[in-house]
Picture 1 (cartoon, rainbow, N blue to C red):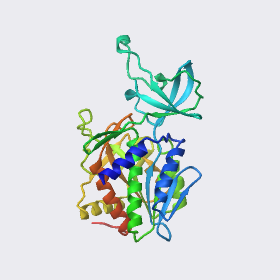
Picture 2: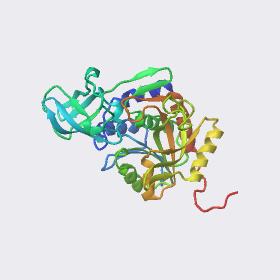
Picture 3: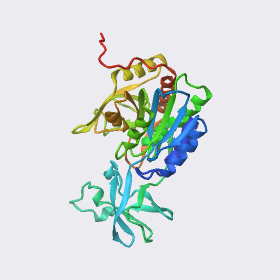
Picture 4: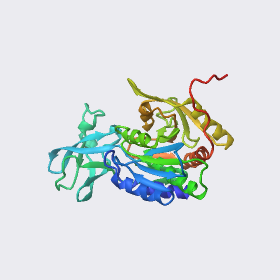
Length: 347
């Protein structure tokens, strides 16, 4: 599977899909899933829904297509533009980074400006997106033009580094799972969903779940690793140690999500049966499309893909984690759901 995942990731990470501007990746995912699914639809918001099997959908498996990035907000000089962040961009990693501006006439190259070290000031510090500017070739650029990181693809053994592995890695898993479901249909109806606007609103997942009305939903998303020198000790997740069964996400205030305990235990049991390595986590500072179930009431679980550098211009993933995640996803699609009713007495 390594070669197949490399191909999917190279293709998917090169296609723009800033939240709210996902049309290029929508087309790519619709074409890819249509090669395997019984039916593919694109809804009014841009979600791609691929149906496998007949009857009322029992399972929905979702991964978001959209990415973080920037948008041109104001003119600063003839060839420099101020920007606004779209989603949770890692500002401290952006100075001097190559970007693409997606104009009506096609993509244009750009660079996030950085002052030479020789001109550094004692008052310099990590700023906000308001402090960033994008340099271009001097040609006019329309206010609100989307900006994404320039494509890169770096291979180091099983490790891949590229922009937007969050969550094009999840999209790669949807394509790989679709191929397996066509080759050997699942005994229950399944809908694979590539969602939009996760990085800003989670409304794509909400609209899709409202339309599908599945018995259970499994979300696939990038999650945090804690195995680099600057993150060790802050958690237990490591690259290459298996996908993550997340129990809890929390950002602030009332912005949180809890996994359905029975559904999560079902995934743990499937992983044990398949002899798959899995990790567990409860994360602060992280949110996903799973919060959409706050409004739909759908029993849900989250399968995290460990990443380094999440929301920076280069993210890193281990192909072993993708391979093990695919096996678990296929087992999830092929095994009947347990009784998900809440309030059952358990010893």
